[in-house]
Image 1 (cartoon, rainbow, N blue to C red):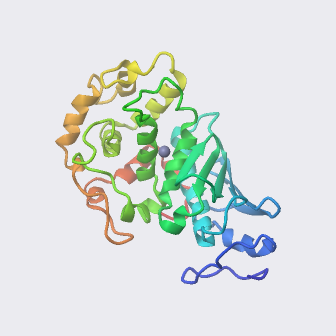
Image 2: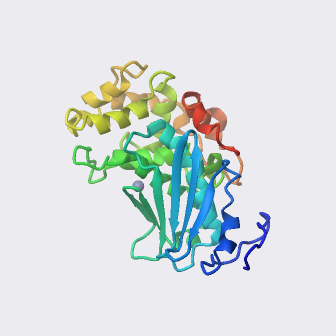
Image 3: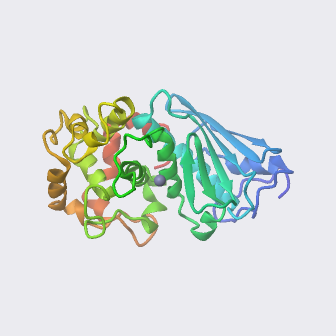
Length: 317
Ligand SMILES: [Zn+2]
């Protein structure tokens, strides 16, 4: 690709690899105006990085895409999509869960290193260079990892363990993956579904239960999942692992002032099992279809009743 190559229309392929010896060939690819206005791109050729910066929803965010450890398996269109996904998903999650120490400068490292799919630590999200080669549209695994960045230091010792699974950490990330999926689940819903009670048969394992709990009991004045995030951050000594047991005091603090007040997780689980939302498919056969679950309950739309400002910057749905 030579410098000054025009932006390719969507029905054409991107070139197979970004050419850091010709930074001007890279810049036009990172036009993120489809997502939000005013996001600028800078190529740091020696470091093999692309830095994207923008003010969205009155907050400054930067995403640095670091390709210094990549071997060229992730295609340029996938790298660009990952950057778009960040600016689509992250400010929305930040608007709901962000705190003063939540990272606003995030680094996405695409690496041909010795790990499997992806992981996150502090403000860095790592994804294996071969993952999107193998699963070309599994972009929302990054929504999951960016949710871990939003969580911050949740992994501390006070979190309850369920058979060695820090289940609240992972359920939160998958809760975000579903609700904040890129472009309303355009890529996600073809290949990643919320499991029904037949597969995830208890409140610790079930992502869908969290989605149902939020949809059913969060109110305009009291956001259950946001309260949970706040309690985990602020009250780690008061709300220890025992307090996060199903009938523990932490959950009661979270549920206070909502219809779930006074109920423990097992009682809520029984309510969930009696709802249609527990069983309707969240998957679709064709990209762009609306799942039976979303047809019955506008789960993704409902979160914006509380955080409408978080989406006003988006130029797409
Ligand atoms: Zn995870």
